[in-house]
Amino acid sequence: MKPPKFSYLRPNNLSEALEMLAEYGDEAKIMSGGQSLIPLLNMRLSTPAYIIDIGRVEELKGIRDEEDSIVIGGMTRHADVEKSPLVREKCPLLSEGIRWVGHNQIRTRGTIGGSIAHADPSAELPCMLTALRGEIVIVSNEEEIILSPEEFFLSYLLTSLEPNQLVKEIRFPKIKKGSGYAFEEVARRHGDFALVEVAAVIELNTDGTIAEAKIALGGANSVPFIPEGTEGFLIGKLPDDSILKEAAVLQIDELDPEGDIHGSKEYRRYLSGVLLERALYKAVERAREGVIA
Ligand SMILES: Cc1cc2nc3c(=O)[nH]c(=O)nc-3n(C[C@H](O)[C@H](O)[C@H](O)COP(=O)(O)OP(=O)(O)OC[C@H]3O[C@@H](n4cnc5c(N)ncnc54)[C@H](O)[C@@H]3O)c2cc1C
Image (tube, rainbow, N blue to C red; front, side, top):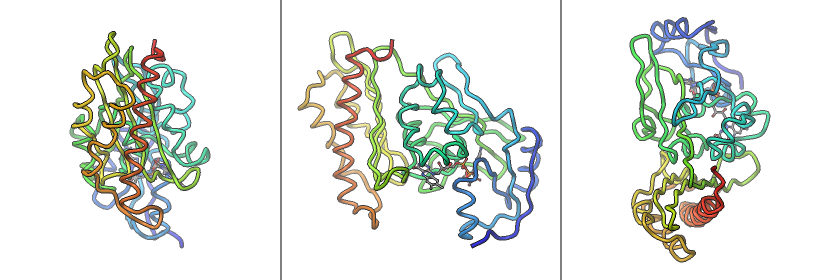
């Protein structure tokens, strides 16, 4: 199918983009990489009167090192994040997980802001951002605000973005010294969205016990899920195999994944436990090996 008729707007900078959003926001859709939007238009699941293409907005592009975070502009392509030496050094979880986003062709077009704004519960970026306890910087022509993933992701493909707002940049906290990380996913085919995915960061004390556990599961609920009980259970424990096994299944009854032709609800719940155990194991191993110097 072909998309419905729309007017195409192409701002040259951020203030132009925000002015257009203020004027046409209710009837407009922002286009970044178009990798999710174009299929939605072609299937006529979205019928905006205006498309605001922010591809030329340089202020929304780039990756920078800022105190405790790596800050990535909304219009930055997945492929640029994947290849970034800065990201690999300071936030390697992101380098590991981003390779699971579609295929190379999709990652050269798709953007970080687009993935976050699209809010697919099986997408890798929202899951990693939630595990890292990152922040989303949102801007309109009136104000700039910073939201946590829990404030931003409301439900399946639904966020708290208002019609006059766009995702300006995303703050991914760096992985601290003494920590290990892991991203685990199962998808039916290479490049498909996850059936379930897990991102984990584990920090160890010098005596080998767990100082901090930060975990998120994607594809297991309508928004990325933080298993707070599991995180609390792990703190202060010596992470041997039996503890990690016990932790991995502690909260699987609380997960509410959608069942579909790719995998039943029960299978996805089971898979969540398996992937969480693998992720915890790998994150602990990496923390012990001192992968973050
Ligand atoms: C075959 C295929 C496989 C894929 N597999 C995966 C996968 O495994 N994992 C995965 O995560 N994704 C996957 N994707 C989607 C891909 O990652 C998209 O790039 C991503 O979801 C959206 O990024 P985009 O820049 O293309 O956004 P667009 O398609 O341009 O926009 C998506 C939505 O976000 C809004 N939007 C975009 N940018 C902003 C902004 N800065 N502020 C506010 N709203 C904004 C748009 O209005 C639209 O509603 C796949 C896509 C395809 C075609």
